[in-house]
Each structure stands twice: as C-alpha cells, then as structure tokens.
Image 1 (cartoon, helix red, strand yellow):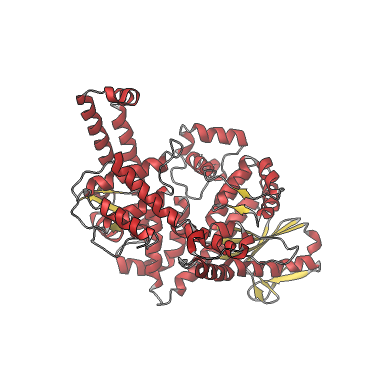
Image 2: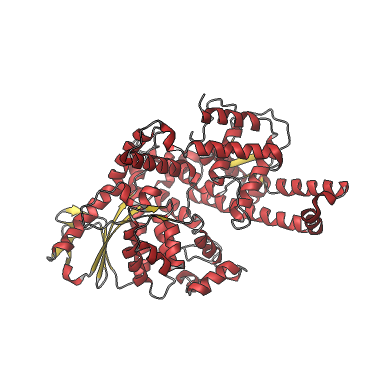
Length: 574
C-alpha cells in the first residue's frame, strides 16, 4: 500500500466516526471564516478550498453511523488537518517518481506536476457576474430544451444562486450579531483562558455551537422567495447525499462536491463550504445537459466558442473606446481569423480558444505528452494563427482583410503601426504553462511571445486598468514588459502579475528587465477582491448602487493611492 492510499484510508476511517450535522456545520463555518476573512489569520491547510471540498466529499462516501460530535479544535481536528496536508504533499513531489532526472526530464516533471496541481488543487476563480453572464449567453438558445428536460428555466438557476448568496451573507452577519452579544465573555476567554468559571465555559461552548449551527440556511427561507416545486427540483440536482462508497478515496478522484455543492445539514437546513461552487456546478450541469441535444455536443461547444469571441470583442471595445477599429471573423488570403484591433499607431491580433484540457495522468512522463498535445491544439494553434497575421505587418507591404463574403473591409499599411501585439484569450485557465509560455510554446529566434490570458482575467484586469487616466498607454507598457518574463516565471495566476503592475508599476518593470527567475506573491489577487467589494464596473453588477456607501477602508485606501477613477458603469448608475 503506497503512502497516499494509506493516508487516505486513515483519514476516511477517522472522519466516519463523526455525527453528520456537526461535521458539516463546523467545516462550513471554517470555510466561511477562511474565504470571508482572508487577512484575519492564515489557515493551517495548504489549499483550504480544495482540501475542504475533498474532505466533505470523502465524508459523504462513508455512509451514516458516526455519533461523535465534531468541533474544529483539539487533537483529532489537528490530526485531520495533518492528514490532509500530507496527502496533498504526496501530489507535489514529482522527484519521487523513479525517473533519472536530467535537465530535460526535470523540465517535463515540473510541467506535469504544476499542471497536475493546477487541475486538481485550484478552485475556479471568477466573479459571480462573469459566471452569470456566461450561463445566460451560452445556454439561452437552448432554453426550451432545458425547460423540457429539467422543469426549470435559466433564470431559475440564477435566481437560486443569488438567493443562496444573499441568505448566506445574512446568516454570516447574524453570527457576528450573536457573538457580539457575549463580547465581554469572549474577550475574557481570550485574555485569561483557564480563569473562566465552569458556568462561563459552558456559556462559551454553547455560544460557539449555536453560532456555527446558525450558519445553516433554512430550506423554508428558500421557499419564501422561490416556489416550493422549483426549490425541490434545484435541491435534487445539486445536493450531495451520503452513500457508503468504498471506491471514492483519493484527493484526485473526481470530486462530487464540484457538481453537488449543496450540503444537507438536517431535514430542514442546508449549508455550503464554498457557495461560489454552486454557480460553477450550474454551468457544468447545463453544459452536460445541452451536450445531449445533438449527441455530439457540437452545438453547445460552438455556442461556447461564439460567446468567447463575442465577449472578448466587447471587453476590448469598452476598454479602447471609439478610436479603435475592430474587425471580427475576418479573412486574410481566404484564411479566417478571430479579431484584429487597430489603433492609430498600434495593432492587436487576437485569437480565442475555448478548448478544455484533458485530465492529466498521474505518471509524469505520460502526463507531459498529453499536456503538450493539448497545449499545441489550443494556445499553440492560436499562436500560429496570430503569427500568420503578424508576418504581414513584419513584411511591411500593404495587405487587405475582408469579411466572410469576401468583401474588402480595410487595407492595412504596416508602416502606420509602430507596435503589433499577439494576444491569445482562453476560456479556461491553465496555470503555470499559460503564465510562462517558455515551457511549451515553440517560437523562432527573435520572435516575441504572445500574451495568453483567460477571458475572466482579461476582463478583470482591463476593467481595473480602465480606471487609470492613461489606461491604453499603460496596457501597451504592460504588454511590452510582460513578454520579457517568459522562460523564467513561476506563477499560477495571471491576476497576480496584473495586480502587481497596477499597484507597483516601477517595481514590476524593474524585475521584467532583469534576467533572474520571478516568483509571484500568492495573495496579490486579493487586490481585485477589495476593489470588487467597493464596486467593480461589471455589466449588471449585483449590489452596484449599494457598494459605494460601504465602509471599506482597504478599498478606499487603494483607490486613493492608485488614483483610480470611479468605474464607468457606476458613474452611469448614480
């Protein structure tokens, strides 16, 4: 029995002893405290979101029977945390594969390991407005089929998620009101600990237990806002049920929580360890459902690709303004391309790819070959398509682009363009191999790397950069410096680099101009979360009229220090 099997079985046996309601309530409480209070202390878990999703899924595979009350404190809890971390570390050790590691093999192992970890350990990162728009635009054409098959329309799924989010925040605020009522007792416990009387200790235990259990959402509250029949259908699609499943064991097994994120605490209450996963589960549910329409999934795949191109155009059009000439689905020498954006002295060649990566193999060499093949078919192909257009600019001769019917739409004179950039926009995030294209992208000597970015990250970055006075010039400066990092960058999240550029542009440019390896800070993307809390500027942003009046000193300080203007859509909403 290898280490990961032994550790996983030990963990599964340990958690099976606990009573259902308390186990779910305490882990839900722990997860809420983690992602709602990022700056109030570090979690003991290495990857809290994914690890909690795993332990909840593992617990649901044990079946009922445990009677021991669970609390997220004490020696047994510490043993659970230790086992979770040991399990994760076994997947972070490519050097223990038995391969004789020369430099080339070492690079392959690193690529396999980093992609493996990105696939399994990183939760989807996006804002709810992005997820909601993606669902509406991708599935609206299939709504009659969706209603026929599952008895719900697209807005029913969205309303359910928004309601859950609102009620979860209310329960969270109620928890703070509940604890504030015993503020003096809590302060005394923190300061004196053992000096508490028996009566005070009992009150403190009762306070903690009631607060934790109180975070559960009453199903009756859901039915006050959405009709009972629809709530029952929605819960049936997204609730994870206990089942004695001996096969489910490993951290890298398909995680049931990803598709069933609603937890039934008891017959009248539900809870979440990560409610944001609900909207991700809705997208996956509808995508799988609509894939059955033609038996091949081609229609919904086409709609997914179409939305990616449409949204990419919209993001650039809003960012660059009326002076930008944008051509979509254009032809150059009868070869179709996605987007070309022309400014007076600068051009952007944009290719979009909605490909998904296949599940990586555990064996690192086999995994490398699959990863390389998937990369070549997506980012690699997009680069070749963009490079074909860039060559016309480099040759310096006038050339024409036409529409789908062959009608000329513009004659381009390369002499008018001082800079030409290639940008690849992907539907998914691919972590290290996307941030550092030097790993897998083959380019000719002297050729520049493109900028490869996910759709959501592109929108998040450009919405924020658009709040700067000279935002277009700053974007061009970012692209010029960002390209220098390929081949020496260690980063799983492009937004860490984007945040660094906005917050400290001089430092960003300095390390771009060096030749040393660059490792990004994992907490830099909190910058965007702070701004989002105060109002981000998304289309149809939720609570956008309320956000400017919130007391958010961190966000206010960032806005003042960086001289960020009010987002355009918030100016319109006032």
